[in-house]
Image 1 (cartoon, protein in one colour):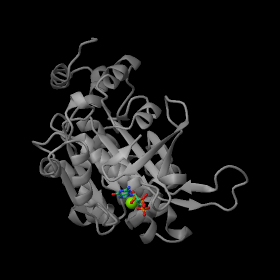
Image 2 (cartoon, rainbow, N blue to C red):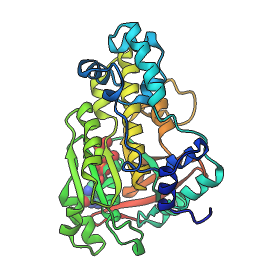
Image 3 (cartoon, helix red, strand yellow):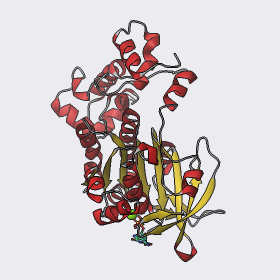
Image 4 (cartoon, protein in one colour):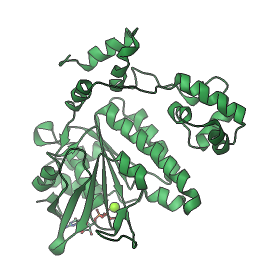
Length: 345
Ligand code: GTP
Ligand code: MG
C-alpha cells in the first residue's frame, strides 16, 4: 500500500463494492466523483434551489446537518418541505468517513513546499509554504500582506528545482491592490522574464463578497489544463466586513465566510495547491494582556487556517513575521525586509 498511486485509488473507486473502501474518496478529484448539486435533490425545483442558495446553502452537506426548523427559517420554506430536503440531502451527501492514519500520511507525502526565497521565513515555516493548506497572513495596514501575496505568486512560477512549483496562480483581488508592475520588479529580482511570469498569474477583481465567492467556482472552471498551484485571496475579509455590519448580521457573515473557506480548501486539496489569504486586524481594547490586535474573522477563520502568520513593521524598514498556532511547528518569529526586488533576508 505504501506506493499506492492516484491511479490505483481511482480504480478502487470504480470497483467499489465494499463500503469500507470509502476512505479512498478523500483522494478523489472532481472528475472521479461528480458532485451532486442541490438542484438534483428530489422535490427541489429551480425556485426552491434559488431560495436555498440565497440563504447560503449551496451544497448537500450544509443541508444535511441542518434542523428542519432552522432551515425553514433561514431559507423561508415550509417546515415540511425543509424536513424532506434535509432527509434527501442526508441520503445523497458525501458525508465522508474515517481514514486510516496511514492513508493520511500517504497524502501528506504529496505535500510540496513553496520557498519564499527568504531563509528566515522558510525556516520559520519548516521549509516553506505547504500545499493542501490554507495560510492566513494578517496584520495592520502597510504591514506587508499584499507584498507577500505578490512575492509568492512570482515564486510559484519558479521551477521546482529553485523552490517554486512551476505552477499557475489565481489571484482574487478585493481591494484593487494587485500591481503587475510590482510583479515585474519581483520577477526581475529572481532573474525571470516578467511577461512569462505575468502570463501565469490570473487575476480577478472581486466587487463584493458574493462575487468573491463566485470567483472560486470560476477558478474551478478555468483550472482545466493549467497547473494550478496557488490561490491568493487579498483580502479575504474586507468585503465581508464592510457588507455585514452589526451583531445581527454576524451569524450570516460567518456562515458565508465558512462556505467560502471550505470552497477554497477544496481547491487546495484537489489541486495539491497552496491557498494564501490575507486578513486585517482589529484592536480589542479589552484584552487584559498580550497584543491587543486580533485578526478578524473569528473562530471560523481561526479553525480554517492551517498556518497563521502575523506581520508587523519594525524599525529601519524591517518586518517581523510571527507564526501563530501551527499544528506541527513551534511558534516563533523571523525578520526580513521588503525591497524593490521583493522580500529579502
Ligand atoms: P493593507 O492592504 O493596506 O492592509 O496593507 P498590506 O499589509 O497589504 O501592506 P502592503 O503589502 O501593501 O505593504 C506596503 C508596504 O510595502 C509599503 O508601505 C512599503 O513599505 C512596502 N513596499 C511596497 N512596495 C515597495 C517597493 O517597491 N520597495 C520597497 N522598498 N518597499 C515597498
Ligand atoms: Mg494589502
